[in-house]
Image (cartoon, rainbow, N blue to C red):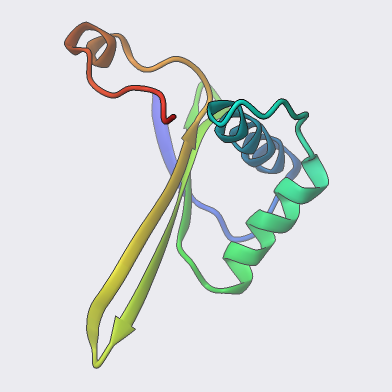
Amino acid sequence: MMEILEIKQANDALAEMVALFRVELRSYKGIASRPNIKAGREEMEEYLFAKFPVYAALVDDKYAGYVVCRIKLKDGKIASMDEHWADDGEAPKWRQDMKIGRKIK
């Protein structure tokens, strides 16, 4: 069963997931790197310090993904919105079957 949690403070498990996501993003550019857990924690702490909403999914009591939403307002209206997300593992079978999505190049 999946549970969605609002994250209020950084922790080691999420820091590792952020670090692994950064390694994956670099790999799309052909850059080999190793996860930097300290940098992952700092990134998560920056999101939280800036008051960006951060949520994580738990599956079987293990983190399965996270999302950070950055919304910028201008004159009380949304001027821009960025969502940063990562998951921990392969795409779900239904997405693979439908051939939805591809790696970023």
